[in-house]
Each structure stands twice: as C-alpha cells, then as structure tokens.
Amino acid sequence: MARITNKKRDEALVRAFVCGATVETAARRAGVSERTVYRRLADPAFQAELKEAGLELLQRTAALLSGAGIGSIKTLVDLQADAAVNPSVRRHAARDVLDLSLRYRDRADYEPRLAAAEQRLAEIMSEGGGQGGPTDLDQDPTNTLDKRSPS
Image 1 (cartoon, rainbow, N blue to C red):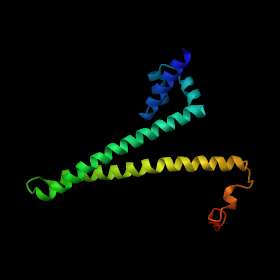
Image 2: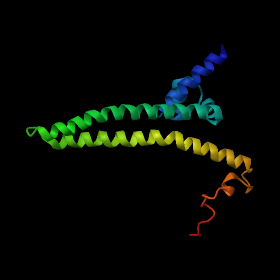
Image 3: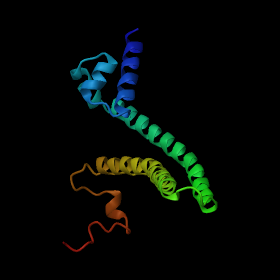
Image 4: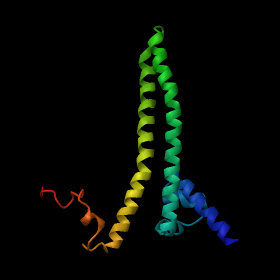
C-alpha cells in the first residue's frame, strides 16, 4: 500500500514541478515535507521521470501551438482580403502565434536529440573514467575540440 502512496506522491510532485511550482508549493500540493521533496529531487530515477514529464508537456504545447498556427495563417490571409478591419492588432497576434509555434516545435524536436547526446556523452565519460583517459572522442576524426587554437 505504501508504494501506491509513494507513486501518487511522485505523480503529484511531477505535476507540480512541470507546472512551474517551487519546492515549497510542490511539497504542499503533494502533502509531503520540503525535505522529502529535496530527497526525491536527488533521486536519479525521479529526475528522469521529471525530465520525461517536462518533455512530454513541451511536445504537447508544441503540437497545440502548431495547430493554432493554421488559424494564424488563415488570419493573415483574411487580412489581405478584409480592408475594413484594422489589420495591425490581428497581424501582430497571428505573427506571435506563428513565431511561438515554430520555436516550440523546434525545441520539441531538439530536446530528445539533446537528451540522447547528453546520455551518450555521459556513457563516453564513464567509459574513459572522466579522468582524461581515452574515449571515443579521442578516436573521432571529426572531433575538433582538442584541435582548436587557444583563445
């Protein structure tokens, strides 16, 4: 029974953090102490769950904004035909929605790729011990990190 409670607690914490809550607010919403929240935040499994939930929210937001982009394009097209409406406000709103949809879509596309690259880098660092030992990067002819001239 305690596992169900812990799972519900973690779900409440994840929901709170994904929505931008502070530690204090997240603790209150989940019905736990701030110390418990800090312990959960230190847990790699919880961190992964939190990251996954944030990515899912980002992807959903990008999809919603992309869908709204179609309406924004229609607004822009309608403005071209409707001389009676003051186009300034509507044009700016349409441009903002399009801009946001593109930014969110790009971010939603890049986030999983960045996460995979970070994971691979962590694997490489652990293979080389993270202490200057040989890594895949040392063998990679496209690696220019060591070949740059000092700034």
